[in-house]
Length: 478
Image 1 (cartoon, rainbow, N blue to C red):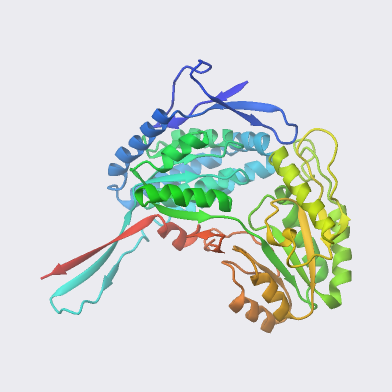
Image 2 (cartoon, rainbow, N blue to C red):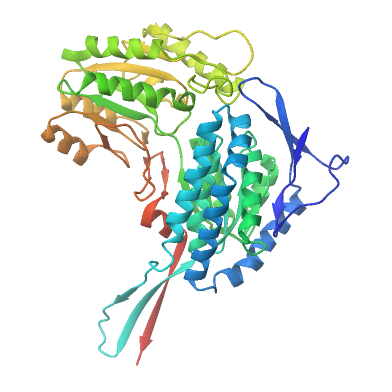
């Protein structure tokens, strides 16, 4: 059985594997339920040592010219690309993704690393006019220090570098806690870090239980915590930040609304929405979570959705990559199924799916629900699964009101050929992103940031990189 060790201060930690003192975290293949590996859970002492190593390394890392930090990140991007087959193989086993999709995720991780490496000569301060004639005001951008990076299970390789690359180019060092559902790919990334020759202590990767994660996040040397996760996890991080007034950056839940106007290309919209909802079994924070359809095309569009949703088959993607893969675990599957049952009990119509499959693995069918209402749980709460509820509307104003009548505001979608409708939604939607005539894809040169309970701060692009900086104003009298 494969056993992975934690990586800190430039090396894989050595404590006797299999000794009585080791706490092991079992990693399952969600397509079969089988245990595929164990990782050693970091002890509190090991975690504190990793933070100390990161803090010590940061003193030298921040002093490097940013171009030299960029050169290291280019080497890391090269290493991630070279190691993509190994990273992808680990990710496919622990996530239920196909090997091709998992390998591509590692390649994309290399691409976003290279993108942030190129910020090396573009991190800018400001010269601000003073009210005094013999005085200059100079605003510097400086690193924060040690950043704790908390990684989700759904896209753990890409999200790893989405957080780590901008933190490093800005002059910070990191302690990364991967999800306990998908930690083995993180240790393959550690091998890429070794291959790239990054200085010891700059990147530290430790699996850990929740109590040890709290010790990490409340360590006085941790200046920032960045999380992609649930609203509940975000609340915990905010509590952790209070201990030392650490900076939070949170990408939390989403409930992406898709508004389908009467003039939309219905076939394209239906195919796009089904692909969004069934990619990685709907376990994507920007996946379509609620669909608002103009009443004059409602029945036609529902028929298209039903046709395409019914055609989606689930199974082990290691054997048939075209299939829809599993959910992350049995608890998730039971939770989603209970939500579907409650929706039907509340008056929704089950068009397809909605049945717990027999056999091994944590699979759930693509499920379409119609006759949904705005006040239903299935519309108000994130499913994070292949569930598509549909609501009928009359006017665009009504659709906009329902889309905005929500606790989340991460992403949103509109299908229309009318530029006036597009501009109206673009100006008035209460979300950090709007995609017109396509579904979300998070371009890494953009800015992925949520409104309302969808988060604080954001990822990607210039603004995502600047999240990992703080400012110093220098007032120079002469």
